[in-house]
Image 1 (tube, rainbow, N blue to C red):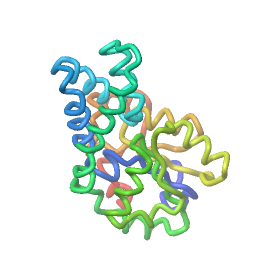
Image 2: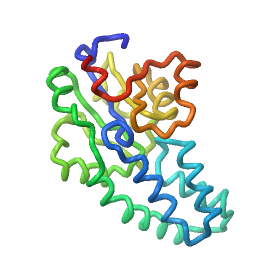
Image 3: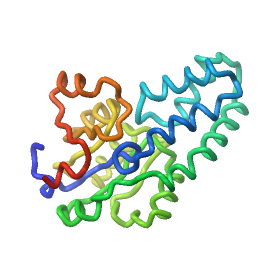
Length: 218
């Protein structure tokens, strides 16, 4: 890290694959939500989802109906798929493993502002972290789709809710691109990532990585 962890004024966390072991939950939910359109189409959406980690569900379903199925005016079908996806994913988000070192990390960065910036649905995220009773750790806010990570980060930087030096902790290529776009330092977390070529990718791009958030405490 360019700064010691405790010296960052703002720390931004992705959710899936960083705070929660929920990448598989999301992958299964995408597949099941569109299986009625056939296994080949469902596998196509799953592949697109896993190749575009961190991108919102809204854009992924847009891609499915517009480019995989090539439907005209699929508004109702998209709405139904989103509802199915949400129903499949909710229980998984409440039951999946979470990062066990958050409280300890917070004690190690008492003066930093924490945020969540995720591709997950914002209302759903806020409910999940409230149910898990750890939403109070993220005093800077919990943000998600339908706004993109690029839009959220730019907005929060402009509003001075993100102040520098600032760090983004993520597990996808999009997380890195979004962080870099607004000048945040970046650390890649590998433990639960679905990026298949992550070792080569971080080496090629000179990206710092840790297996889990425990690595920051070492």
